[in-house]
Length: 170
Image (cartoon, rainbow, N blue to C red; front, side, top):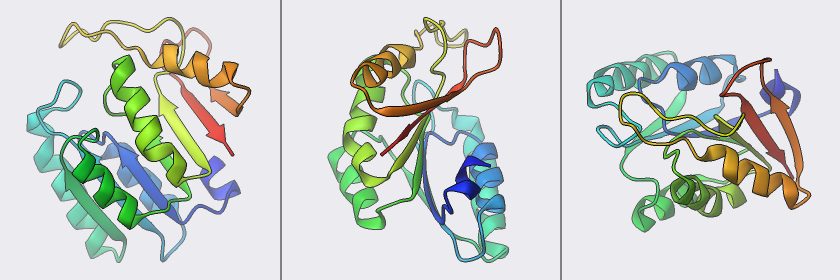
């Protein structure tokens, strides 16, 4: 609903795993919208086995006439950041890749300037430890810093959730 209310027609998702969220977003955006999916299969937060599903999603979206691109690589790599920058700007971005503090902060610094609407996944609480890797989710730390800067933010968090979506609007 938020994306439709802001008439979003160009979308970047950092950290797509199997493509579920990317698929849903691209299907609700108006005809002629463009999307870029950036994923690092096999990375700390990715999943090597999800690549087949993600490529299938991209293929199906293209068959349905959607203008989408799939970029495989590390969002923190400057060549990848340059490639993404050349495909932008975007009207909305979802950052859901590296959940370590330094990684999510780098994604914000590299890509946040490319859109007036930037959403983050897993902003709630004090963070948790991902059970499959044992790595901490440190997105809440960055989220609290962004809110403390006085940026216009909005949160979509269910009661009792340790996940949630945080949105920065500029």
